Amino acid sequence: MALFRRKSRDEKPKRHELLDIPLGSMIELSDEITFEISDAASRTFELTERKKYEGHSLLRYMYRLEDEDEVVVLGVDRIGGTNEYEISRWIIDGEEELSEDLPDTITLHYPDPDDEDAEIAVEYERQEIVPAEMTVVNLLEMETFEAELHEYTSEDDEMMSVELVGNWLTFYVGESISLSDVNIYPAEDDEEEYM
Image 1 (cartoon, rainbow, N blue to C red):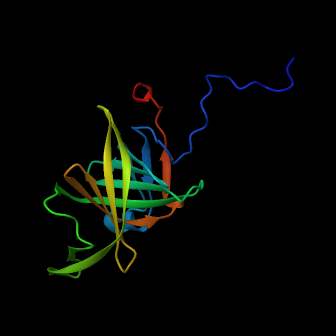
Image 2 (cartoon, rainbow, N blue to C red; image 1 turned 135 degrees about the horizontal axis):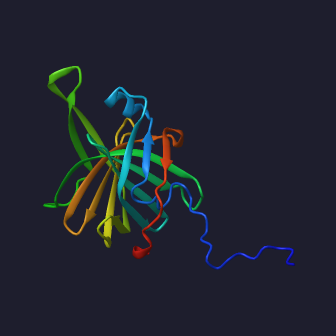
Image 3 (cartoon, rainbow, N blue to C red; image 1 turned 180 degrees about the vertical axis):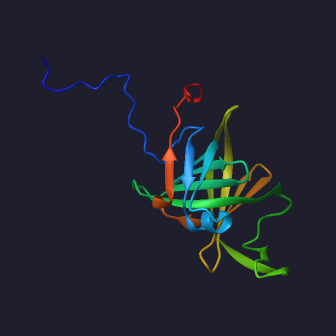
């Protein structure tokens, strides 16, 4: 009789709850933005697509979450080489073809909630450009691309991340949220054929 249990070769290492969340998982958000938008204490979304970015000192996940009314993106960034993570909530602000180099400053205009005829201008300053390998997994396929992430922040610490793949841009605008604002109900992981 062995004193120590041998680890089975078939046993998988335990997955960190924030990394490689399986498609079809349900994710509940209870952050302040969710409350402001929907007047509900929380909302539950289904995970329909996962983007993973890997680069020099970069590990980021962008999880596309959908319900019947809205699409949001949950961001997970590893802090340096640690096992600590920053959580963020994003919206996809736009997609377009690259026509000229991205500027160091981008100004976005939003409707003024207090005056429907006015707009609020938010100026974002570029902080860095990070090359990354991006892996996209959805229910149909898994694809890998070379990407550039252009990271911007505003004076109020709002964030904008511009993903450049080939000549296609995707604009994400977001804010940091707390891990306590996120509840994950993982689906069975049936993505083995992609790995």
